[in-house]
Length: 179
Image (cartoon, helix red, strand yellow):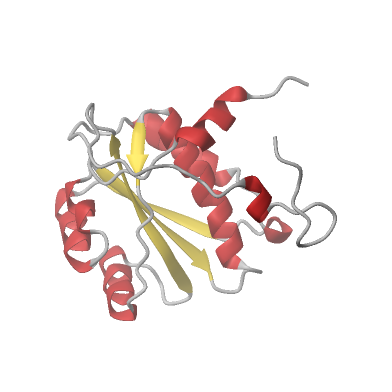
C-alpha cells in the first residue's frame, strides 16, 4: 500500500492563521470541508456534531466582537461553528477528530484557520444565542476560514520536543529509539 504523502505534508506544514485574504471561500471548498468533517470517526459512530456555516458579514463581526480570543473572526470571509450533542460519549475527543480533518483539508485547499475556544461561559452563551444553538448542544469552537495571505507575517517557529521526550518504548520512561 502506497503512503499518502500529501496528508503527512499537511500535518507537518499546517500553521495557525489569523489573517485572511478577503476573497470568498467557494461553495465547493466549503462542501469539501464539511464532507471531511462528516467522515471523521466518532465514538460508537454516533457522529454527534453539528456544523453552522457562517458567511454573513454582520454575524461574523458580532461574533468577533464577543470572542475575546477571536476578534479576527470579524475579518474572515467565513467561519464554521462546531457544536456537539451533550449526550455523546467523550464529545471532546470526537470534536478533536473532526476539527483536525477540517483543518488539514482547509490547508490543502490553501485556506488558513485558527481554533477559537470560547472558554468564558458568558461569551459562549452569547455566541450560542447569535447562532441559535439549542441548550442541549455544546459549542466547541468557531473556526474562521480564509485564503492565506501571500506574505504571512508573524509565523511562529514549529520546533517540537524531541521524540524521545514524548514517545516511550514498551513502558513509560524508556525513550523510543530516535530516527
